[in-house]
View 1 (cartoon, rainbow, N blue to C red):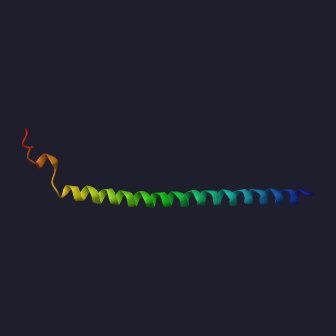
View 2 (view 1 turned 30 degrees about the vertical axis):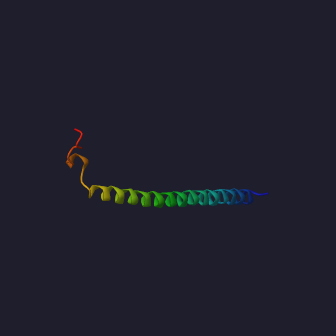
View 3 (view 1 turned 180 degrees about the horizontal axis):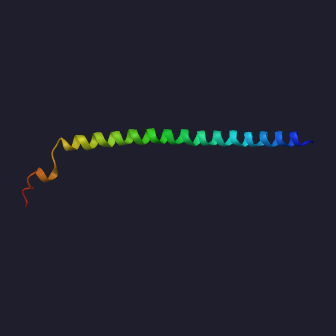
Length: 68
């Protein structure tokens, strides 16, 4: 095996490793994007709930109950 063949095999090995790494990183990024979308939906739901409760007024604006 000459020097060119060895270098070619080394380059092919590095490319194969980089392809696997890139695929792994892409899978991780895709998973994080899905998780981010779920969290954004949940945050919007919480925001709607908080806004709907604010329509009823703040607790400190209400008069105290009769037993006070």
